[in-house]
Amino acid sequence: MSTAEKTTKHSDDAGDPGETAGTAEPAGTADRPGARLLGPLLAVAVALAALNLRPVVTSLGPLLSRVRGDLHMSAAVAGALTAVPSVCFGLFGFASPVLARRFGPTVVVTAGMGAITAGVAARSFAGSTAVFLVLTAVALAGVAVSNVLIPVVIKRYFPQRVGPMIGLYSMALSLGTSLAAATTVPLTGALGGSWRVGLGLWAVLAALALLVWVVTVALRRDGRGSAAGAGGAGAAGPASGERLAIARSRTAWAMAGFFGCQATGAYATMGWISQIYQDAGVSASTSGVLLAVVMAISVPVSFVLPNLAARRGDQRLFVVVLAACGVAGYLGLALAPAGGAWLWALLVGLSNCAFPLTLTMIGLRARSAGGVAQLSAFAQGVGYLISIPGPILVGTLYESTGGWYLPLAFMGALLVPQVLIGLRAARNRFVEDEAG
Image 1 (cartoon, rainbow, N blue to C red):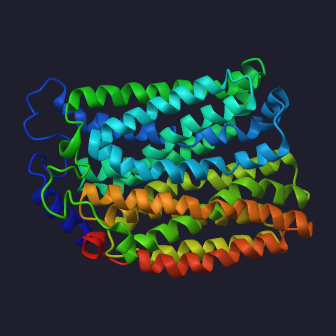
Image 2: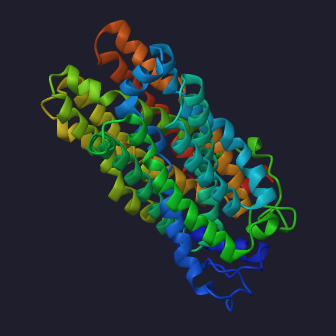
């Protein structure tokens, strides 16, 4: 066990005597029917939730032209639609710790799954652009609170298995991203060709996750306030329940900056890499497969990387290695995009694995579930807001120059501050020591 995990275990035990550290079963519930299933059930719930955090976005991209035509959506609105996820993730993410303190993180994540289910299902019936955008925002609000609070649930109920559980969460999230991007169009065609069916279909997966979370909350009966480990008023001491002046923590700001840099690169890659390949002469179908490779490579890496990172006192080595992969990938795309297409896709995909690394570090940079809740909301909220201009700027540079040298130079240059900030975020520090 790493030093960080030992410290985490000690502080969780001291600040929260109502739960046995390292398990997902609160003390005093062992004799309840189904109590032995709570740990595995919560792990399944985490994985199912993660599967639903990206199809809201990645299922829309392949069908956007059909949606625009049917709803008479302008090109400007369609362009702004690509920024909506980051805006929602940033704004709604800030509200997550407040909701978690009031209702408990498991209850709020369950509500998030409900919002995703309702938003995805209802937007498939939208008759206007405005209604479609509002319902998409409802679904993204559910994604936002779940983004922030699932690491809190992991820290709270699996304090000795943060690395493996973050790995499971990250792997399932990457799988959901790839699955929606790769299968939405074929499934839409098989079910009659309507974009409404193709988008609404993902509500079924969200409803399954919602059902499992409802059962989990019903069995736990510990959703609200300090009993849920959200840093409520009942928890004692700064290691467990005190509200932190999180903006005073240099580590928190470093985590936010690192998250923002990696999110900028990831969204720019997802939005534009297919166009880069097509402009180099690669067919549309092959460029789609290459995009799938970029996203799919993170599935196995997202499981292994958090385990390796959690075993170390700091994660600076991983920050540097992932950035180096990105530099090599962007350089290859600029100089020989078609000649080494598969290698560049692999390298860029590895670079995007800074996301599960960030989630792991969020879980390790605070001693308690309450600290993780506040750090997660701050890092993701500020980070997603930082990432909003990036993909738009890449598109602007591409349109103004007619080529990819300058946009790719920008994406490669962005890795410099990512490394510098990441080296600070990766040090073995705790936000409670800086902001308590």
